[in-house]
Amino acid sequence: MDNNRIMIAVDTQGSDKGPATIVKGACQALQDNGNLIVCLVGDQTVIDEALKGNNAPMDRVRIIHAPDTITNYDHPVQALQRKPDSSLVKALAELRDDPSCAGLINAGSTGALLVGSMMYLSKPGERVRPALAAILPSENGGFTAVVDTGANIDCMPSMLVQFAHQGTQLMKDMYKIESPRVGLLSNGAEESKGNKLVKETHEMLKKEEGINFVGNIEGTNALSGDCDVLVCDGFAGNMVLKTSEGMARRLIKDIVKYAKKSGKMEYMEVVNHLMAVYDFNSLGGAIVLGVSKPVIKAHGAANEASIRNTIKMLMNMAENKKVFVREDN
Image (cartoon, rainbow, N blue to C red; front, side, top):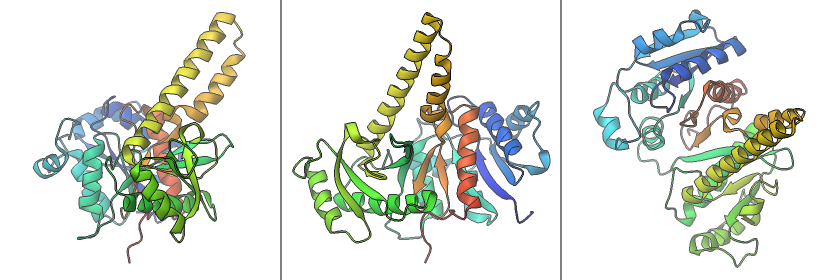
């Protein structure tokens, strides 16, 4: 393989919209970047059919046949063990075993992806737990990494401190922020606010070396730009992510409705801007932190634009040598 080219494994199965949408997005990404090679993992018959009419440069397409699928209804651990021919298992094995494979994208079961990432991309006996980081646009024109957004629902304070370190390193690598500001999601900015988990974590973060802790951040300021990393347990983080997504969708729909009703179609420029900034399909996916190679969880309802942008996100990480999100010592 050309040393300048980067291969990304794409799990084509398990998403809400089906393999054809995933393949179409991958083909669009291939047309964007001549250094990209995609390894499409899934049912070969389905992939071959989906490739038709997409003008894919076939010299930069690999296919790994994997006829089985892990669904959201499967138990993650059992499915990974009992479905060796599933697309997720085959894709994880490719990422682990092939040095030329720089990362993996999956739009299927979050639980199976996280457990599989631990099984295939962690050292034996390692205690670091993967976390999901969603990078969201903030009011000041920058970005905020929300960690965790669903990987760890029930957390201990030490886990949130780990998330702070992972998020700090991510923002240093991706955005060259020398000392990322870390905020702790709470029900108020005052130090006295928060539940037991938040209060104990607050005390630990104040004393933690290597963390630029700026205190509690309440929900209304989660994306204000007051912090570069917002730390929370996976339950709260998922609520932040889904609520932000829902509010953005509602706002865009209301503006479109008003623009059509008023006949002032110049408002569509505003709509297009908002969609480019806030629509989840334009943002890429959530990064799995704490594993030895990049894994990105795309939205389950991702369309081809979302897959295209998620691959672009992963390519940027690989091309700029931001491949490892956990150091192997």
